[in-house]
Image: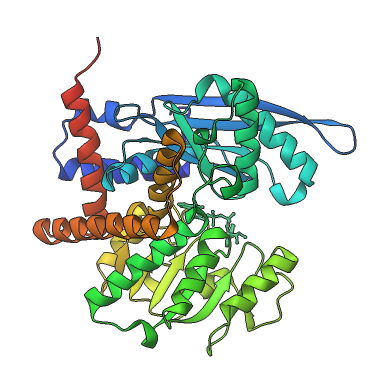
Length: 419
Ligand code: NAD
């Protein structure tokens, strides 16, 4: 029992130990690699529109500080807790190491329902959260980014709050901010674009054609909507999409731009009359070539893994598949090709890294250069994962985690144990 106890952290722990066994990491070196370096809990009081005061629970976990500052998103969602952000910070460490970024992982969040808050309340919450975090973050200490329930506007408020404290504009304190305040071109689309670039690599690997393929996307926020749009631009037919309220399905395929327009107007798919309504479970298990979970953790578990009917599982969300489900997927007659989360959604942190570099050096890269560098990093990492999986006869997830964990392990050994 630790302060991080909970089902999501247990999953991260379990995955780590399976890979640590494979890498023969001695038992007494595992705790140092796995246990988060810092866990911060905050009371975040704000004044509500009706004049009352509400205190929200805030969290931030900085997983390791061995290779540079920590880096990771901030999530505004009702069920956020210490265990969830610790697991997400841990995965972020393996992800950054896998794709060769000089960061440890971090994650934070506030337990709240952002849709139930007014814009003024959201601004107060964002500013107060950052204000409370000031002793623990910094451009070379911990750099935040958006995640579930937060966006460019949240990052602009974080950046403004930090800058007012510092006494000078400090754009590099967060990534994923609007371009007008030092954000980078391409960051908003980076995660979804990266997902689709890797799906295209997987299609080629499997000898499949994009324009003869179908896809289902769970979660229609930043990552899911961009992934669906880019897939449709490659000619993939989008059979189903969902958000937290509804799941819709159309065997003839959706016009993704129309869905995005609906989202922009109404804020959710709830009132969308296109396609037919299905349950989230039906959506995940419907027949398609490419399944893209782009919402929350642990949606593919031992209860539904055997029923998945896709060739490629592109894990845009963090931790969508439990280790039990992984086993089931790998033992099927026709195994599902998994693009594991730490590779699949790494486009976001890669372009965040580019944004941070531009901020530090006061540079402004053009979009073409950013996308070229993004694709290069993704290709390198995809090739490395595929080669490792083949060489050691392991799953793509195992290969990706092995590469990431090994790099952090090696850095810790080379730096030694202080004092
Ligand atoms: P978002 O808040 O923009 O969108 C999330 C979407 O998921 C929304 O459509 C929401 O309605 C839906 N959703 C929430 N709970 C759901 C549920 N239980 N079932 C079905 N749908 C549900 O968030 P986002 O930034 O698009 O992030 C989505 C996922 O991608 C998260 O797992 C996040 O950690 C991961 N991720 C995001 C980024 C990024 O750059 N934003 C980078 C890497 C990974």
